[in-house]
Image (cartoon, rainbow, N blue to C red; front, side):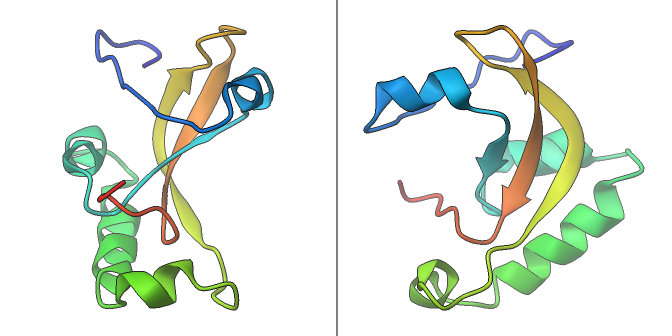
Length: 98
């Protein structure tokens, strides 16, 4: 992560897509979401988004017809290939189980 000692391990089925990555999304259930936003100006907005999203089941969150939504955490990570800063979002379509 940018400006931190945290390392976030990510998985992809297409390694070539990492070169073009411009942002990162966490599942609302991810434990780092609270840690990253607690005590920040983004805390309330993120918390409300997480609460709203967790009321929807996984099928509906990832269905093709569901509007994909996210909220900025106020934090950044680094693209492991390019070294560029990428904003971190919490997104309704990302599932923690994966």
